[in-house]
Length: 637
Image 1 (cartoon, rainbow, N blue to C red):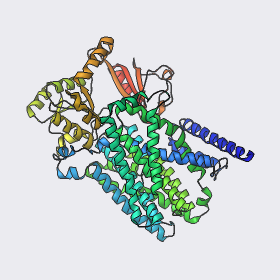
Image 2: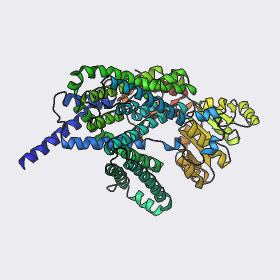
Image 3: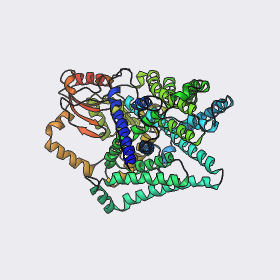
């Protein structure tokens, strides 16, 4: 009994050390402004320091830590599934109406086609290199090494694109879809490969299909629950606060259902957890944004850091440096990691410039959680040696550190303008009024309409206007849409409006799409696309109420003769990260009115700290606002 208590105390002591390190790593790394090491890399490095290859303070066989680390990995895959924006993949039946207007070449080489072809070529190259290394006696299972090399890291690609303001637009969306396809298909192939290895090539391999049937069933059930049972939906909303947190409990239950089902079917847990996260992504509404933030807080605040630190704890540095074969394997794997992504990424040249193409290949070369997980699975099954596993972890650390830096160096600065255009579709009276107001506030506006006469009227108002249709077959229009930050659709016909919004979201990857609807009943199908809708019956009443209570705010937003501006800018300058507002001297009369961080709206004070990714609402004179925008958007590498 006494020994059992001592063991439990030791486990909690080790857990305290790991959690303390998880707290100290981001604090320490935030002090290094020039050399910005990803936090997960720091967590792996401190794990090496206190683990088997270092000071030995943490036992790699600690059952409590191993359970928490495994759950952290499952949670990471769950959150990865939640990151998918299915509205950009166009699963709706209406997609045919969009595709009918596309020319053959642009349709064939859309984001999904480029992503799929890139992964297929990457898989072939990985297989060739893996079998070559097997012939040299450097790897035990060429098939497993093929899948390991084929991975990428959606978890690295997404934040880098967001930081650069490139997650919207066709280039950013094509990169995200390519990373998504690589991650998902690799997980599926690893699952099938391990199942075949465990059970043999029998009909039992079809058990993997049960997992996908469960995915479809749970998704359909969720839709039925949301759309056909409003009473139950209201009950869920009522139980979402305080001590109930019913949505959070439902998310954890769903994740564990798929994890347990995966275990029962002999399928890898990563696939089940990923599919559970994808269901949450499909079913969540804008009102569920808080749920996403809560899940991310729990995952990245506790479980996921334990996983990465334990990866470092289990890292066998002696196995790597004690073997000549392993030392030879490391540079070969590192070169292969870049080669199998950079070469297939030349497919990007079919749609993008050479600098964009090369930078895409560099960013897709980043590896992190999935390559480490795949290697751990191979190690557990005896398909990957200790030496190879250590080399793979080092490759992950090196690629996740260098790939984002290469991307920044290769991507052309002129492709990241401070002010990308706002597209107004429809040069009718309302559309021209909207464009005029935006122009008065010094935004770059491009009006698009198929009617040449309307385009003439727009140009007479000193507006930049282009005659054409919202379809990639129209190269003149596509040139603007590929770079747009926002699209406002003002056409009157509802079906035409839906087609335009769908093309903007699905084909051109524009994240912020806004349209006006007369019928509130039409709002759900637009919302499923990720389109922000404004309805006359609901939103105008709220706007008038705000105007009645805050007349000065309305005047600030609408007047252009006082040279005062209210602008939003994303803080991307690492020199200001962690600084308090009172420590900063902003140009002229510029003030930070509000900031949004991880979905939370904050009214700042002098001691409010700024962090990269914060959206700041600035108010002040026009020229001072523009100077402040440039300061906050600077990159210091």
